[in-house]
Length: 293
Ligand SMILES: Cc1cc2nc3c(=O)[nH]c(=O)nc-3n(C[C@H](O)[C@H](O)[C@H](O)COP(=O)(O)OP(=O)(O)OC[C@H]3O[C@@H](n4cnc5c(N)ncnc54)[C@H](O)[C@@H]3O)c2cc1C
Ligand code: FES
Image (cartoon, rainbow, N blue to C red; front, side):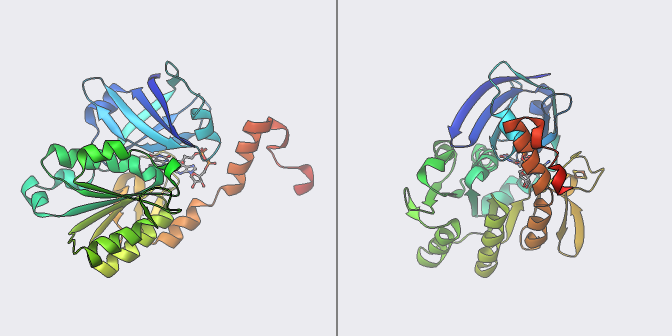
């Protein structure tokens, strides 16, 4: 069992948890994820490692309530336990294996959309710890949905905030800011790392392709084992099929087939809806109505 040592409600549907997981905390690097399971019959939920403390033997996760399992997770309190925490999974970010001298020659910009700010944070923090200051564009639908701004400001060179409705920072989407920085302020970036909803990463990549900036994205397809055994997480990248859990989750964004990825992400919509109904109303309708069969 893995004890939750801290629970913090960030905004709206976003929660932060610190979990005692000595093995994961000892080995994990930025870019990697873990899988948590709640109860013997619970499903496996992949989540990016948002932070870690090797001495305290803890990891931090930030998750958004989008369905039955994450809703159940949001009811947990400090002192409760996950049945399983498996990780670290996936490959660390490319930067971890890049010589620091090489990284210092680069000018890196991160694009964080919504809850994507959480996986961006450990990467910016890691760069900062190695003497490299990156820029960050942080976007959300509105001011009250913005997370991790203060944390990011402590480790980034500049944080540019935008909201879709203009309630805070610039009004507009993350790609508007990137275009403004490059085309109007003359900023030159040699690397972009975009993490957030798949649709945001798709449009970020279309923009960076136009601007000629190589771009890495962190993909979040449906996963089951997370160890390369089933192919549920497969994606098409360039002309190859890749398993996000072992080949990724980070990929060259200019090669990812985003439309296919979005289609595959929707494949269990009916089952997910039923699971949420079962959680809210009991099992009565969760199997579907007799008349529908
Ligand atoms: C590598 C990776 C890292 C992730 N990191 C984060 C993170 O840091 N924070 C965060 O909030 N979310 C993250 N996710 C997404 C998170 O796993 C899903 O939101 C969660 O599994 C939804 O479960 P649910 O039962 O609440 O929702 P459901 O009702 O089951 O599903 C809602 C939506 O979540 C997605 N989803 C469902 N099951 C899975 C699954 N097993 N694997 C992936 N996606 C699924 C589907 O697109 C679905 O449409 C990550 C996913 C992956 C693959
Ligand atoms: S989740 Fe099964 S191979 Fe990736």
